[in-house]
Image 1 (cartoon, rainbow, N blue to C red):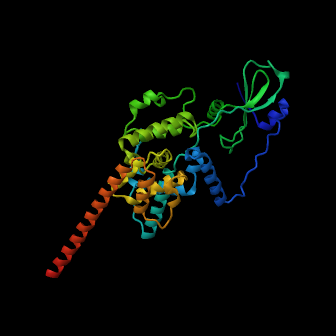
Image 2: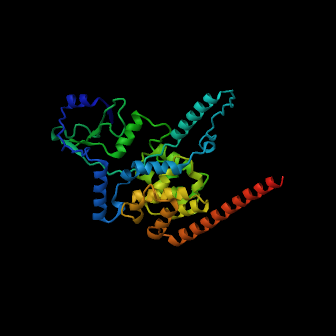
Image 3: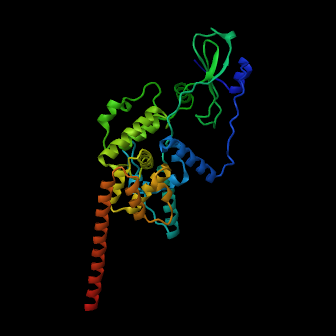
Length: 364
């Protein structure tokens, strides 16, 4: 039974006095340099980058910069018409000046960036088991738990106070399942189902619908149905990323909001070799080097981590990664050499074409 009351009124009505919790000391005065030193010390102690928080690594400014650069900006793909059953408005045409066209281009870029806002990558939520009070005097007052919800507008759902009074008199913080349900009842998310988890998110069902024409839909639907730290959300995104990586369908998610999180997942789990090969086959050394930088920023114990410097060339960075940190070094090395050879031939062809054009002009 849900009771919609202001939190202060709960205290006044039921005389619930919450015991003071230990105060958390926030080390906000630590500089970024000090925090980085502490992270390096921690990595040396545990000898593994996997002990590092996924959330902390994903939200680093340098990591975000690289992921946004790798995502790309294809206006045709970002603003493509989507089949949602809505009526498609007719196009409009208008004459504009050069300055007005510049303003419209800036506006279009801002809209594109909003559409490419990456879903956050978080660690899986831990179960909530916090008892606030135990009052045996009201034991048996009701046969069902009573949920008290703060309905203040402007409060984020994750920060909203939701507590439960159990029939035995225990007052505790609501579990994640209860929080999700109460938030959806009073502050509903459009298209999110409340009572039943859609069958498409069951592992066996998901296997049947995974494919390049469904990746974007599955990930978008996943964002609507679950919070980013929900176990099913994390399981679904990982299943899609693994399928994309297994079949090399990286371009399907390129220039979508899910490309950055996928790149981060592959780098964080040391599965980015095939994506690097994908870039090298396209003769895109800059993006391959950018991915290597993400790998170095995430894995501070890696050999390449200490060489993510502005003055190092893309080729040198890729070679360093191939020789020290790659799990498929032979494959990456062969692809890199083939790409360099193809790029050299392209340069010779362009040079030859320019020389022939110059000779033709002289003859004229």
